[in-house]
Length: 132
Image (cartoon, rainbow, N blue to C red):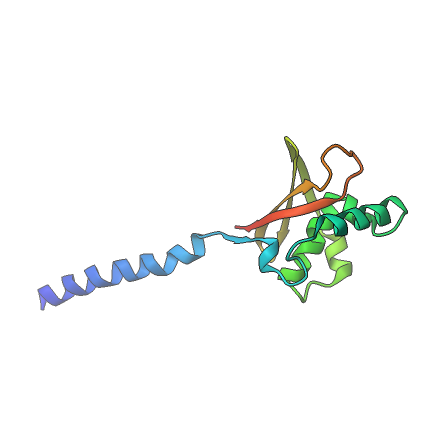
């Protein structure tokens, strides 16, 4: 009887640990994994930039707004009005923008870079989103 209890405990501890590991893991979402964000050609980027310069689709030039827009493809039920009102913390690291958004009690770090680095009014492109 004593051996079976010890054996049972030795079997249960690894199972509990393995069940907890996925909860600690982070998920990385790349644009190529998201429908409609597979990537833009150089010509498409130039056309989008031209539209933004003309006053259309201004959210492409706002890293926080574009990051939240990208999130809506990971969370299809995320209503646009809620998305726009979500607080976001924006930081810049070298030539990269990092937007932090808390949604569904998870931290989302969205990394973006300028499509045209030499242009300070350049549109932004999502590199990846890390969900912690």
